[in-house]
Image 1 (cartoon, helix red, strand yellow):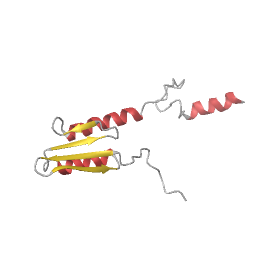
Image 2: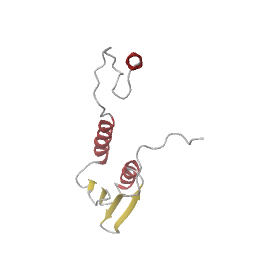
Image 3: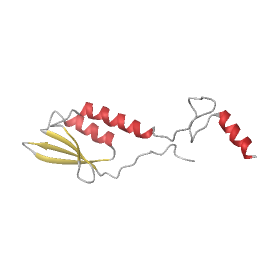
Image 4: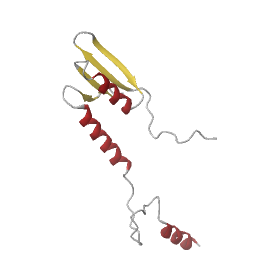
Length: 117
């Protein structure tokens, strides 16, 4: 039996949270997802000088010195949603709002089967 739905995004621990403190130095934490990285920043934002989210290419995606983690998270969520809804346009002849090129309405499916024979 299948274990259920598999995640659509996987990370290999290449997302790193760097916690910089003037007194204790730098601590790096590998995170398995952006959600985990955001939670790590939120958990330590008041106890460190600067918290950063860094990708595998060592590009700084977030720094608490210049950005607010709550605002950055909202922008990240919005962009993630925007990219997930990018689908091929399809003009349904029945004007169904739930009809897409890769997920046709029932009427379009019937037409497709009928036209195939």
